[in-house]
Amino acid sequence: MKAASLVLSLIALFVPMTPVRSGAQAVEWRDDLVDHMTGAWKLEGQVMGRDAHHEVQAEWVLNHQFLRIHEKTDAGAPAPEHRYEATWFLGYDPVSERYVLHLLDVFGARFSETIGYGMRDGNAIRFVFEYPDGPFHTTYRWSPEKDTWQWLMEQKNKDGKWTNFADLKLTRLSR
Image 1 (cartoon, one colour):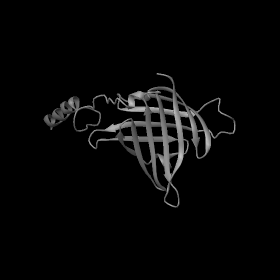
Image 2 (cartoon, rainbow, N blue to C red; image 1 turned 120 degrees about the vertical axis):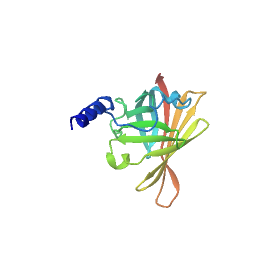
Image 3 (cartoon, rainbow, N blue to C red; image 1 turned 135 degrees about the horizontal axis):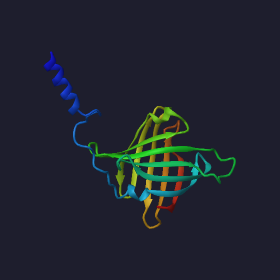
Image 4 (spheres, rainbow, N blue to C red; image 1 turned 45 degrees about the vertical axis):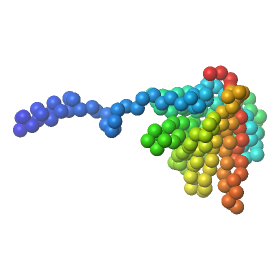
């Protein structure tokens, strides 16, 4: 019995205390398009037909596995503008060869349970979210000549037609 206790004690000393996953730790994710989104941005445009004035900060986090995009209504936005805040986590799954986009925002967990999956097409990544109330598309499009981004969000209306939910332009403040 003492021998078994000694063996178990030795095993406990050498077994990692963190969960083990198959394969080695992921190497830093590098993406020549997504990297252009890092830095501070002014976001302006329309959301559901209303003006939006937000500030956006994007930085690599979690061992360079995700680009964290923090978006919130600019402090100088007009008083009647709806206040909004969100954190997006943009990553890439090399196994399924697609981008993933997690959204956490002021509307709570209901809409955060759906992950967007995206494919790159040149300087754009188009994400598809399959929300409980219907599909939703978000396209991030970078304009290299202007160093700006367009975020176009579309949803299906009750008649099954795609309509703009938001059309936003990001202009760089700093990197």
